[in-house]
Length: 136
Image (cartoon, rainbow, N blue to C red; front, side, top):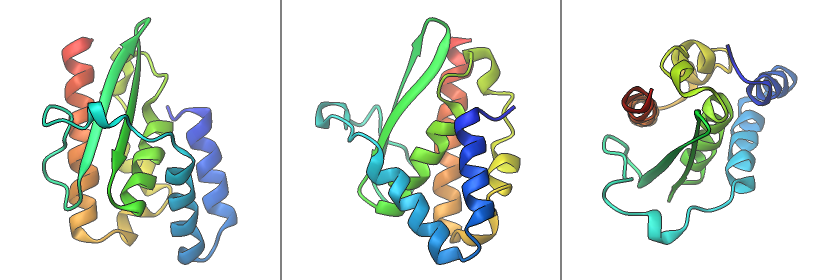
């Protein structure tokens, strides 16, 4: 069910054995992502439940789900980039069928994120699923 881009991240993680290297890779994913326009960093796009500031700006284009996002924390920005590879480009009706917890579990992230970060990732996934459900 995962996108080809997400499968590439899974392969990269399998190659990187050290968790510091994996964290660095996640941070690099975030650095490579274009910043979200400040005009989109508004209360409507802010995700509650995250320890850091997080904004997600979803859109539906030709029946396919896309979102951009940003955070004031580098690791969270990287997690947004990972979620983008998991969801972007999927038909909007498929988004809610993605088992994000299982897919992120393939990266081992479930075991290596703090409780606060795990709650933030859950909040981001819930926002993504909510928007997709409303537009399916």
